[in-house]
Image (cartoon, rainbow, N blue to C red):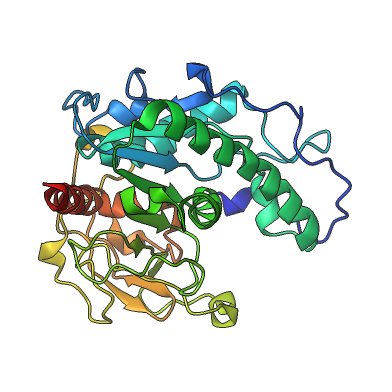
Length: 330
């Protein structure tokens, strides 16, 4: 999230409209998807100028929900992004789809719907009831896209849910309302619900406790060592997974076990052995990344890097869980 762009919040009156045009999004149209296996999109990209992977033959799907890219100040009281906003969709494609969704292009077929996302300001406003309405409007698109995906694209294959930030706010609700208690629950390999808290009692799926466990939830929010924001103390207990060791202990992982990050320059490829991590209460702590210029790093909240700091770790873990799930079917 670009917190630098929300200074205008402070205290303000919410007079805006929820959503935009009230028509449902037509998810049979490819332009309403940020990524599809049959599309040429940034989820196909491989770090380090290593070409593309179009996920043509994988027997597992990945349903990916991207974070907020609607970060500009709201105009004309329009709190949900238009589905066809060129600038917002380009931001989504060049950042989240390229640096996050592409993690899964060696895992399965990636399906990432565009949705009329809520503006970043709703996460910081005082009027929680209005914020909930804006988020609910966005969720209706997510739900409709998932239902279309299941009916027209999935063909009874196993699937992974992956999400970040606002995407996770919608994904955990989606799992609760559309997957839990249905036949789909038996086909969910794992869910990576990253960048937002997932209360331990919110979902019936358990937290993942080992690297190869299936039918479980992985979640984390990344902060620098010894920093815990004040608001964390007010939260309910949440799922926290160490995305290097894939267990929930409170010991720092060995930096040499870090499989690799993809940082600001995608073409530089995967950079291994630069991060160690451990659980601290409801959050994930990391030691300062061992990268050029690290002495000048003053970042405390690594929210924007929740996924790509652990790019290769997540990819290899998703492959491990995918293969464990498929082995069970044999």
